[in-house]
Length: 288
Image (cartoon, rainbow, N blue to C red):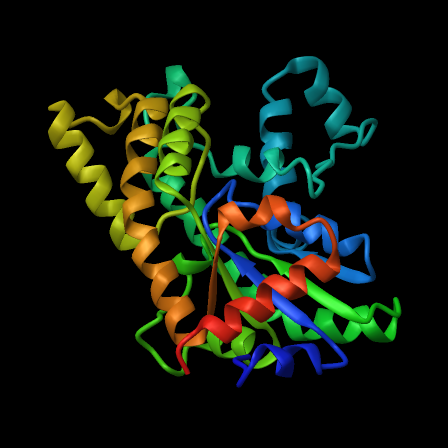
């Protein structure tokens, strides 16, 4: 959705917004504030983990449990039940399943298996994003929510083709919601990199980008064997490349389909009124 003026947004009886941007820019913070004021909060990552990846995640737990003789017998006799306790605040089961490629002695998984799990995540994220219209309707019809906010994952830009005017995900989101890019700052980028180097975590990459990054990293480290790669070091190095890769994609989506606000604007938003005022100013300041 794009608007002729900020007032046109205000005049809508029903608000629906998709927030997107890098990790830590404030998407979930804003969605949480709105959820307290009669907005339905739709977390794409939560939908991925509980609807489309749950079986993969739990099966992986079971594979690990089967390596322990005591647990193996209990599982085979259906004496214990293993499930994922994923929540809006704790997405660790999903990121742990994605894993990191490299040396198995350091917690890495084979690169081929890593690519397979990445493909599963891509399919799951695409389906979760395409579910947005259904959940807008369900939020209103079942739960009586008047407004809707989609808290998208940082990898939204990786599963769409912004150069394709008929991209199904972007077309769906733009038709049913206002797309809002939360732009990070240089200081935030440096902080993200420092934080990631201390605590590397799995990420989603476009297949072509991943293959190129994997080959480049192995060349830089002068290793030919996949199992010789330090998974944490690759994750940290890859994250820095990913930051540079994603920013222009986010900007292109915002320019073509939506609007941009700054992460520095987020702390001042403490209510629905603050949020709508920020969007109104953003629309009015945007080129027509």
